Image (tube, rainbow, N blue to C red; front, side, top):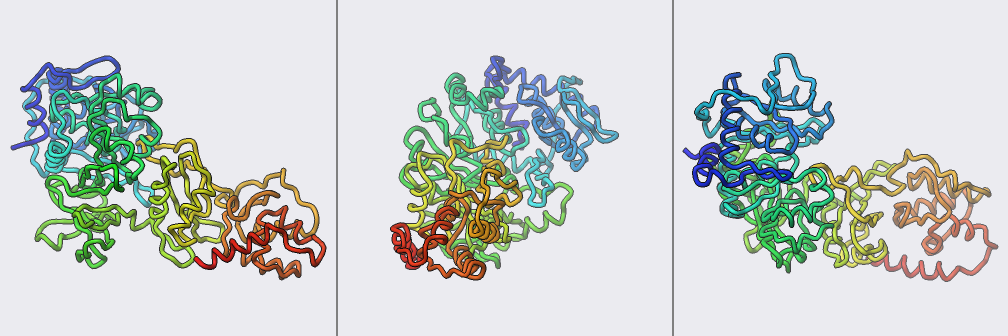
Length: 582
């Protein structure tokens, strides 16, 4: 029977002195890793570790971490990774929620009474590896939950073996390869990287924290990395083209045509898709430089279906929800049977099997590949229209000067949603708006587009949306800017009107109604109505478009009656006409 342990043993037998793990100038051979893991497994087994017994591991990126990984598997236990960089309170919550009876760590953590804490260098008598069954668990990986409570995804040993089979078909790693171990311990991609290296005879190369964050390109070159798995947000600003990579796998986020154009002709460029619930990877596409990447087709042992709300297959080219099945499916969520029943459903196409409801939208292309269309639950209504922020996000990515893009739906002071875009590139907001307005109606054009030097990233290397700066209207609790005082009755009244309509804390004299404050034509109508009611002045829309700041609108309203409209107002009239004709 093929298992994770027997696959590793085959690599030890093939070339015991080959490097298995390399970190900070130190190599651990396959023989050394095997012997150290055997001793740890013997100690764990003597403590009572075996099939279905969870062993939490909280260790920094080091050879000891891989010894613990292999030792837990050899003892027949369930490997529960906990990132030591997480706040202690989060680690302790996960330990408590998982009810893990064993913990391998060198950290000072508060644990439940009865938890057995094991030192990473603990040794016991060498034993024959426990013969865990395929349906027994190999891993439990925590992922973020929409309710704020992390979800423990339970991955079986059969699913992990199926992942390895898919990697061998798609990535084809093996002896001589050096695999970058970039993912944090707690992320499911850690399983992907370790399997790709240590179960195929390759060398797993672990960077230091400095090399991982600030010197990644230099490290990839110096270490001779041949295969790396990185998120689009990680690679967008770093020059990987001439690093000697054989294969780059994009994963964790949608991959845009900008990366396809950069990398497809430089090395093998793969776009991988899959939630933790499908044992990391479900589909892979080989990316070409002349088209927007799809998520490809199902890997070994996985099935993919695009279904409607009634679990019927949708026609080719029609959007639906992505469902996954096959050998890689997780058992479910740790201690959460109701959520497991909600997300893992009976397979209508195969008796006795299950499908996982991903919450992702997709469509089958005419080549049989699947195009990723965003999240089902990220859709919002804007001006009565159902909007998926990924649609304008993809359009921004296609701009030739944009290196990275993100569009989010943000709640405003009225309780509605507005789109906010963030880009990295040598572009300006006006040019990006013009680009989008050639393709989309006004409600699909972000209210604000902020141009950044780089994107903030999470510890997992994904875009940290929570750290993105927001326009002023998206922060209604911000303190007023004391620099922007008010003088005159008209000015004071206009500020009150604009603050009320736009939901912002204060208005600067030169803040632009559309570009700075998040206004739109519907809110401009409300401004016009309040000006008429409170100031007794009836303005046409062209005058409002032509005076988009507090300073210019105040000047316009206090000018002598009968003054001819400014050239700005005339140009605004043309602008308004163009908007109405869209």
